[in-house]
Length: 119
Image 1 (cartoon, rainbow, N blue to C red):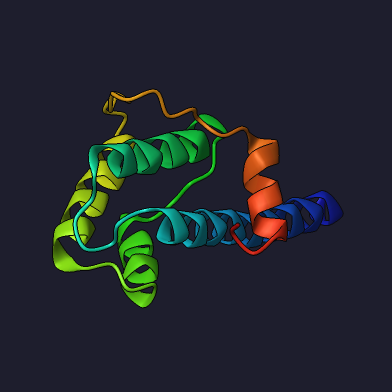
Image 2 (image 1 turned 30 degrees about the vertical axis):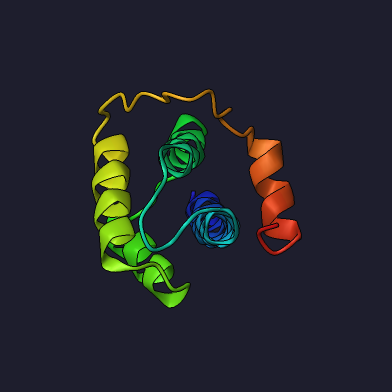
C-alpha cells in the first residue's frame, strides 16, 4: 500500500511538471503570434483556443502563473487584462466563444509546441 502511494505521488509530481511545461509552451507560442500590446480579435481567439485545449485535456493552469509568464514575454497591460480575464473564465468553466474560426489545438499539438520550445 505504501509503495502504491509513493508511485501515485511520483506520477502526480511528473504530471505537474508536464502541466507547467505545456502551459509555458502555449504562452511562448502565443507570445510569438499575437500583438502583445493590444489583442486583435484573431489574437483573442488564439488565446481562447489555446487555453480551451489545456482545459479540455484536463491540464490545470493558474491564471496568476499565466499572467507572470505573459509579463515575462513582454505582454502589455491591455493584452494582459484580456488574457487574465479569458484564462480565469476558462478555468471557471465559462464557455468562451471562438468568433473567428481558430481551431483548438490537440494535446499532441500542445506537446509538439513544448518539444519545439513553443513554436
